[in-house]
Each structure stands twice: as structure tokens, then as C-alpha cells.
Length: 351
Image (cartoon, helix red, strand yellow):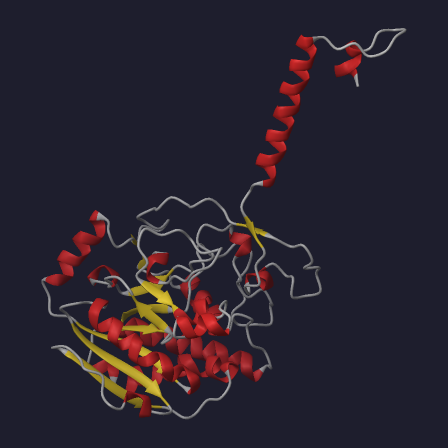
């Protein structure tokens, strides 16, 4: 009240001069402006599994919980350990494309097609024909328990092949998550190792919508998770249970990587798939499964074996309030986007 004590005489009613009235209005305007600006911070209520990373799946209250989307981070071109962080339209990416364009490279693109995911296969391959390593030799490896969705055959361009790798039926996402790394290791050992130099593993419910060229090639390649890029380290949904082989300590980890796209030299991918499969089997024998499924084991491996090349969220993106703002969206997860659509929207977007 000390601020306004001069408004009242010792013995009489309030007397406000014109100057004082103007001053009060000005102060009130400042207060309203400050409060409005404070409340206008961008926030989104998120049903995304990131809530589990912050421990809210363990009995902590979720009512009113909000996540604040941080400002778009800068676009560094290098990791802390000196590897390239790839953004497709930079000069560095031009140099990488020019380097690999001088060679004839054989690259594989592998996806698992089981159950209802068969509805995505034609769009996945057709979009890859347009945008994935255009002008290079590419073999599509489709691991599936039902090859019928590939009949009639999808029309492919020159130097493009499609090979079907039969796998046993795996109903249920949990069972699939336990087997995917083992299936990748088996496919590499039994077939892929003799046919291509590089292999990339991708979720089939994705669509290439912009060029993905030779800039992605490297010995061991990981892709930044679009909803966690720019987030603080304590928001990363690493496995924290010490009984799990995927457990990550508080002082470990630089980035959080998505399992939607990763790859590299066939030899490196075979080591990755074999190591992750072994960790999953160890946990399974102990009745444990990391909460992030195979993505947790992938992140554990990539902490111990840092990628030689990291792809920006341009190469794995979906429409989400938490997703990073990127200059170009190159590979979009239809499955992640469709989760947020209602029945009519799913029909419109061909989910």
C-alpha cells in the first residue's frame, strides 16, 4: 500500500489529480502486459510416451501436467565427438553427396511388414523410389509373414530390386519388439551381407516426401528423435531400471535416437543388431522388458558405440506439438501421425 499512500489525505476522502490518474493507468497497463506475456508461453498437454520418461507412469500425479516446448534449437553441424550432424540442405551435405556420388554404392532399405502394417508397404516403397538415394543401386528387403500385399509387384526403376524375406507370424507389438533385432541380424547374416554395402532399417509406416541422398551414408548412422531434439537430458526416456540391460545412468547419453530409421555399413549393423538382440534375450530371461522396447536397447548400444553420422529430425518427423521445427521434412511417420487422428481424419489421410 506504500506505493499509493499519497492518494489519500490525512482527514478526507481520496483526491486524485489528473496526473495521478494517468500514472495509475500506466502502472495498471504494465501489470496486465506482464501477466499476459507470462501466461502466453507455449505449452501443450501431451499424451505422448515421453510422460513415462519423467516417471509419471509410476504413480505420480498427471492432472494438469504440461510440457513446455522449448524454443527451436540452433542447427549444429557437428556432434560433441566430432561426427557430422546432417541437415540435408547444407554445404556439408553437398560435399558428402559429391563424395559418395563418385562411387557405385549398393544400399539396402529394410522394413518389417507384419499384420496390419501391410497397408503401408506400397506407399513406403513408391515414395522411396522417388526420394531414397535417387540414382543409386537400392535393394528393398521386406521381412514379412504375408507377402500377398506385394502382389501385383510394385514397379521399380533401374538398379532397384525388391526381395521378400519370410518370417514367422508375430501377433502383438510386444512380441514383435522382442524379435525385430534378432530378425535383422539373421537377415544380414543369411542374405544381406553378400548383396549390399550399406543397410538402413526403417519402420514401414513412413513416407519419403523429400530427397534423402548420399549425405546419410556412414559407418554407423542414427537419427535424432524429433520430439526430444532440443529437450533437456532429463527428459530423455532412457531405461532407468537397473535390472534392465538397457539401463542408462544419469551421467550417460548425449542424444535420444529414434528407432524409425538407423543404419550404416552392413558389418556395423550386424554388430548392432546382434548386441541389441542379446540384451533383449538377457532381459527376457529375467522377465524384464525395457519400457521403450527395442528403442531403449538401440539407445543403450549407441551410447556405448557412438554413431559416426547423426541425421537431424528432418529424417524422422511427424506432426506433433513437441516435434522440432525443421527446414525440410524428408521422412514422415504416418503411423505416429495417425495415432492423433479421429476415424474421419484417418480416412482422409489414408491411415
